[in-house]
Length: 409
Image (cartoon, rainbow, N blue to C red; front, side, top):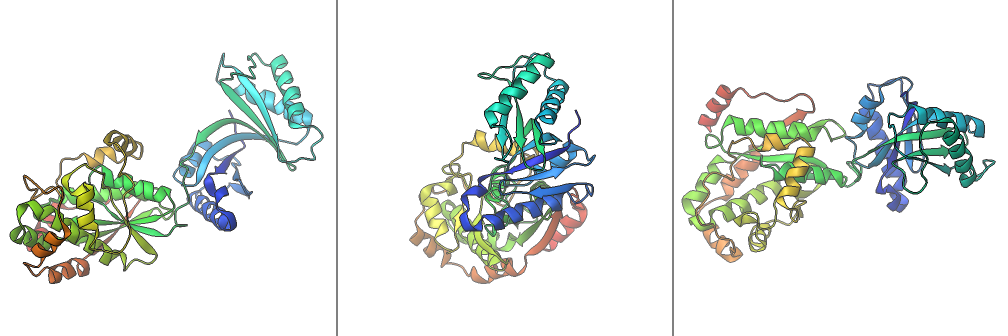
């Protein structure tokens, strides 16, 4: 059927008190930016939603863009009419007849934003419902309907809503600042990045590159994951900070007992992450895909021994999720098939046979004192390569060139 427009309903922004208008402005600005290619659209903002008049635009294409914006609870497709009872009756009837839902039970609900309208909501619902029942070959069921047709009466016009599409929920990106995401290439960290964005944080990625031990295809994998996450960023871009980690990683496994190698490596990674994050404007958090108990470095004791080397907060959005839940979300955001490509990252090489699951911080300090790691750490931070990945424009790596560069490193 032909729709006149879309109502994008805000999510939990109603909880935000005095900052509410700032948050609403942020989400409306983000939606307008995403829909810039549809120059025929017109907008009307209220405290609870953004009404978008299509003016001939394809509603499917418009909703596809809106559904990359956090902070939207749902999108409602509407047909509009004058706020007069006869117009409401005939428009609702036309909408019901156009529904491709043979045999499904329908209920008409009414909500008046315009409290000065001549009839109450129950009165309008009764009149319109009776009119539809008498003139359309559809069953009306007020108690157990399969579909609801929602009539929203405003002073300027009335919206008759016949279809709802769930939004992403959450908060608009940017209202909570920025986070540096430790993006490994596995299943967990892209999902963690998505969840950070859902809570209103813009993200930049940090990846530890260890050529020649990690292949150019592992680097390609991370670029492809970043491209998927970039679709949710208001700018349509994601910045990646590629850390040259080979020299420091080799030094760790040359000087540290095998059982503590992974713990010391993670401590170094956290130090690098904090050093890079401090150079990013508005970045107050580090985030990653650590999940409690999943591997030796993700036990509570390991997290304590690792986390204590930095002061910046570390958020672990998937820490309490089952692996099946993480996989399901990875499929939904289209990162799953990239994450399972069989290319090793720096955390999967030099893996000890029996890593400590309950390392002690004081023991870590003793092992770190056995070699001069500070210059190597500084080289990691200073040698970061900054790569910007754009949504819809995947970066393709020249493997031969990458391998030659890796050999020099």
